[in-house]
Structure formats: C-alpha cells, structure tokens
Length: 442
Image 1 (cartoon, rainbow, N blue to C red):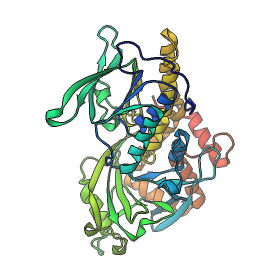
Image 2: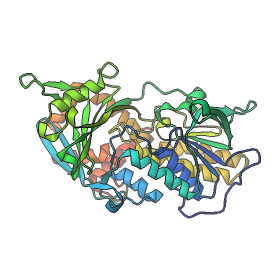
Image 3: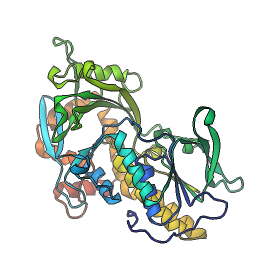
Image 4: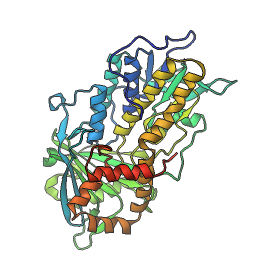
C-alpha cells in the first residue's frame, strides 16, 4: 500500500508549467480534498484547492470517528487532543434484540485506542485551513462543473466552472497537468466524462438531526441494530435500517439512521418520517423530540464499495466519495476519504517528479494501490451489505450474535476494519486471511 507523503517540505518536484494555473487541481475541500492538498503542498507542489461553498459550512454526517479515522488525522498532523475540541470515546455500544453490549476499541499497533466526535461544521474548515497552512491555495465559492480534456489525446487538462453567486457569478477555467476529483457523492467531474456509478454496488442513505439532550456526554458511540416505533405501546413496529446516537459533549446529541440500497425499503421510504417514528419511541427523558431539536433533518447519500470506477483515467484521479470509497460494512466515509487522499497524493508526487511513461506509470499505480488497500475488504463488505439487507437475516444475526461478546468483539474489528494484519491475535489473523483469500473488487 502506498504510504502518506513525508510531512516535511521538500523543493517542488515539478515547477508549474507555463500556461498552467497549478501543478495539481484538487476539486472539493472536504476531508479527501483537504487531506490530498495538504500532502501535495508539503511536497512543494503548487496546489489549487477549489471549494464550491464558503467556510464554515454544515455537512450531513454522524460526526463520529473510529480509530481508523483518528489515525488518518494524526498522520496528516491534526491535533486530536481533547483540549483542542475533540471528544474522545472508548468504543461502541451496540443495541438490539433486547441486548445492550459495550465494546471497547481494540488495542492495536496499527491504530489508536480511541475514537472521537467532532461536528462537521467545524471539522471540514479545520482541515481546509490546515491545507492552506501547508501552502495550498484555497478558492472558496468556486463551483466546478466539468473537466476539460485535450481534444487530441482525451487527457484531462483542467476544469471549468464558475466563481461567485448571483450577479457576481462569472465563468472560470483552471489548467493543470493533474486533477484530483474530491467532489463527493455528486461526482460532477467524473459525470462530465461519462464515468457513471455501478448500480450493482451498494449505496446508503442517511438522515440526521441534532437534539438538546442529557445524553450529550457518553464514553461510547451508540449503534441501534433494530429501530422500533413504540409510539403505540400496544403495537410496536420494527422499522428498516439501523440508527446511531452520538453525544456531542456540547449539550446535544447527533441522532440519525441509515438504510442500505439492498433493503426493500430503500428508495420507497420517507426517511425523515422514519427518523421521527423511531425517536418518538425512545424514552422521553432522552430528549429526542421536536421541541428539543436543533436545526432541521438533513439527508445524504453514501456511495459504497468502489461504486464508481476506474479510479484513474489520464490526468484525473477519483478520491473519496467521488470514487465510492465509503465502507459498505458500517457507512464510515471520512477515514477512507482521507486514506485514499494520502495514496492519491503519494502517486501524484511521484508522477510529477518524473517525465514520459514513468510519470504515467506512477499515476496508473493509484487504482492498483487502492485495490491492494481496500479491494478485497470491500468485496466482502459488498456481500455483507447484500445479506443484511434481508430483514430476516438481520433479525437472526442480532438475536444470536449480540449475546456473544467474543463474537461481537471480532465483528467490531471486521466492520470497523481495525486489525493488525501481521502481529495481531487470532481474530486479526482471521480477518487478514479472509481479505487475502478474497478476490479484490475492481
């Protein structure tokens, strides 16, 4: 697997070529884009980071980070201490089938032993400003609409879009030898080139809302494998999907639910009404009622399991959600957006230090490195999401799996992709063997 670029600055590997606006254009200043821009700028490259919004900006998210996400943040140089506004947690609390089980994050060499919560309203700007400090040139209110290609070769040579809003809106173009599409689930750059998603790969949809709640401080992220509508105590109803409750430490909780495309309810459900039905059945003292709501319900799609490929075409890399990098086991996206960004940056730095076919070989290594890092794991995850989309399978798994703590500890490692592949215990070795023997998703 490609490693993140070194964190010390080095002389520019490729001074900006005459006629270009930058060495690299990064479209989107979310976790993928800002991470890539940080690593690229540290390597001395001239990086344009284009963001359609202005900071601070809200983003629909659970706001929860597993140890895998914390590792990526530590690697890129973010201060993740509690004194810097991060609320740490010990693990995951899982509820279902009448059982509540608290599972601590595993003690591993590869990952820290803590997760955290941090609001996306604050988190995305923190990463973007981190990229600026590294030397990236951030352009806010710059909406990219399509890629530009060389008429002769078809290679991506830049992007088109517009700057500003309303009467101040004007068209712009930016040129660079390399573009990183980090524009999220909308994937406008990829779509402008006809790169459509694979509908056979799973998608998810999630909705969330903040509530003032006494449960704001919690040592565990909380996951509900069964969603019950208990508004009528005489006739409780099992709802589709799974839910979460993450205490934010500021007097509120982030509460939401998700549904996979493998569920029969996907696409035909009023997700906002579903969230309300579930929360109306939770204990009133938790506070998850309309009168305690902070803001509106927000929704977002989750592109999973490499659902948009190829991840590289000449001049363009798809990074993060634009390439369907969300974990199909648990819907986690930020860790994988940042991980793919570090790999994309490493390949880009190598390419821009070379010329001719050697430069192209470095870029072609990006999808190979992504398959090596996640391809086999995501194939297993795609199969897993298909299985649990069947409510009968989900009920059986919840009823018979949750009471067995050893099994659930193993599943926590598998679902959160937290294991030591070489020096771990028996469960780590089993997960490593499963991924080694499973053909990679392409």
